[in-house]
Structures are given as structure tokens and as C-alpha cells.
Image 1 (cartoon, rainbow, N blue to C red):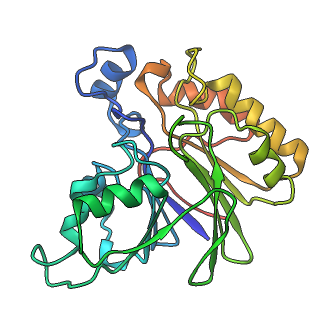
Image 2 (cartoon, helix red, strand yellow):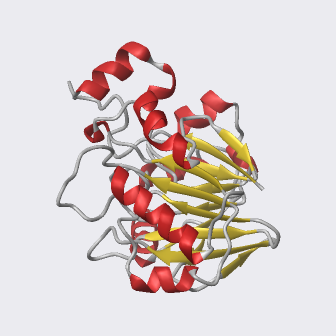
Length: 268
């Protein structure tokens, strides 16, 4: 399997649009890996993880053809993950397609929003529920319970082709017991995990700072879910975390973690 990180930023990206934060200023001046569009990824070239407002820019930058996607998996309905108005461009009259080429996977809230906006449009939708595996082609897709939203099931995803398994978590918080208990019976070959809050401790429990990130990784190691052969990548970084790309590398690379950046593609 492979994963292509198309975006690795938080809700407002880096540099944040109206921000004069240290990290935003640095990213404007330095460019490169410090510039982060809103988080999304592509698995094996055709399973799209989230469809946010930077999708057009990401696929154009990477030379991708979205007509090759067979599915779009939504993690939750925050606008940096669900660009609802952009879905219309998959279908006639914006192009020649009478049916979308991809199946949409999402929770009950996303299903309602999609069909309120597009009543009677021929989108194929599969509702996701935490810990209920679904089949898509040769893949088994399992939504996990994230600790991110109070009134909506926010999902992280296990994606397995029968030989390799990816765990993708952009908005996780420190998982609660049901998620840890479910993961205890699994082995993960690639872990993509958010580190939104960086070096800044906040009272919000829906995202991870550096210390919480390390806690999650260490607990996964103790459970046997990951080991030294597992590829570990970061994503969903916020400028409010007060961490540049190089600073994150110095902090986490000694722990076997690769700092994700826009455009990074990894085979595992």
C-alpha cells in the first residue's frame, strides 16, 4: 500500500490566512515544507481521505486525476474536511458524468448535509458507524471513534487490503477506552496521526500536542499495534502549535517519527 499526503495543515492551514503568528510568518518567508494546505490524503491512488477546500490546489500541484478515485472517506463534517459545494463538480452539468465515479463514505451528519444540498443527485453514499467494518473493493475500512466532537461521530480510519493496514487519524484527541480496546487486536503498518497543537498546551481535548502525540504512539507500541517496522507520519499541524517543520523534526524524528508535509508519498 501507499499513502500520499496531499495536505498536512489544520483548519486554517499554514500560513494561516489572516495570521501574524511566528509560524505563519516563517512559512510565508521560507515556503517549502512549512507551507501546509488543509489535511487530506490518498491511499493507493484511489481512496481519498477527506475532501476539503484545498482539493483543487492539491490535485493540480501533484498532477493527479480525481476521476481515478473510487471512494471519498470523510472523517467528520468540519469545513476543512468537508467542502460540500465542491462535490457538485463531479457531475453533470459541470462535466459529462451522469454518475459520480466515487462512493462517498461518511457519518450520519455528512449524509444529511450531502443530500440536503444535493437532493436527488446520483451520489452513492455509504453511512459509516464507529467500529463497524465496511468492504470497498479488496479493502476493509473500519471507522474508529475519535475524541473530537461532542454532537457528531468523528472518525479515524483503519484501511486494510488484507496484507497491509493503515491507521489514519487527523482529528483524534487522546482516544477513549473503546478505541484502545478495539485497536488492541490489530496490527498497523502505517500510522498517520495528528499533532495539531504542537508545543502549545491548551484545555481543548479534541486535538493532540507533542506530549499527547508521544503518549499515543507509546501506548500503541505497548499494545503491539505498532512496532519498529511501522511507518509513523504526522499530519494536521496548526500554526497555533508554534512549531516549524524543522522544529518538529528535531523533536520527533529521534522517536522514529517522520514529519509529514504536503506532497509526501510513502509506500509501506
